[in-house]
Image (cartoon, rainbow, N blue to C red; front, top):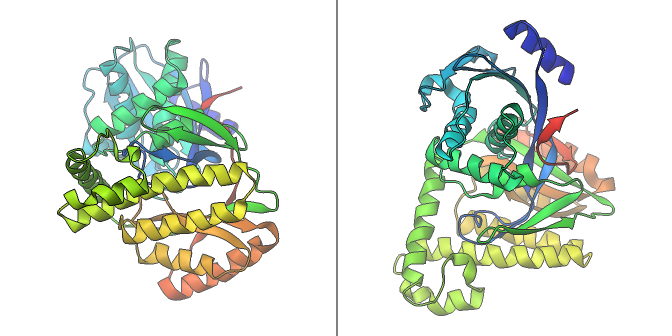
Length: 389
């Protein structure tokens, strides 16, 4: 891939002298969905698929972005003198937002830069192509401009800040954190209220992680995501009148049941119930993994999907079909929706000798029921973002 990037960069910008090449992974969340902005725990891992980038400083104030995946946009030109989200920039608003966020945090760039990217994360799949691009841009800026006092956690937080405030999606920290802090063969058990984290080896023995892309993304994803976040904020405000808490993640299931009477809106009850129960499920799931109880881990994944479908209402017909098919397939240990919802992907743990049948049988049944094909990725857990030698 490095050679392709170098060739395209030279084609667009004359030569490759002084360039550096970087990689930033996608991520999949094994369990702990919509808990990251509710002060709960998450359990994501970085993938070996992701976004590659090559960049070089310029002598002027211009910034050039080019995506080999989205060449219909051509070279998108912006300026350090006008860091504003513009519809015409399309995908380039994500890296530009990171430049803006660096400026907001006091890291002013003296010159612009040229940047070419290529990624193999499917667009709209829920595997965090936006966070991958944001963290990629962060490590590129630190590398090009010799910014040495930002940690990878800082870069993740800047990526989240840019997505919240420049691109208008009120996401939590999980995606950027997993992309920045990934570790091969480990998932990250992260307490999003404190950013305390630990790496947990993912030892699946005779099983693999299989991601299934539904190939649908419903347009309400960003607006509904922000709606869910607001509903949780409203639920928290009401629960604070009855319990001494700072986040929904501070409650056990029993404490929530004791105090839920203060929530007069049944929708808020369902949203808060998911946030509280999902946090507890995640804590239990990591304990099960550490105890080598993969069966229990799978059961908790299944419970997570039911909660996301019924209480948080972020699933959709196509995803539910994929999960139902997985649950009925021999050798599947657990399966659930992953990502923000309303389409995207499922994540399943599948016994090794069942993977081929899983892909062929679910692929055929899904196409028959929905009318188009799903895509299947048998994935490995990889490292976080950084420069490629």
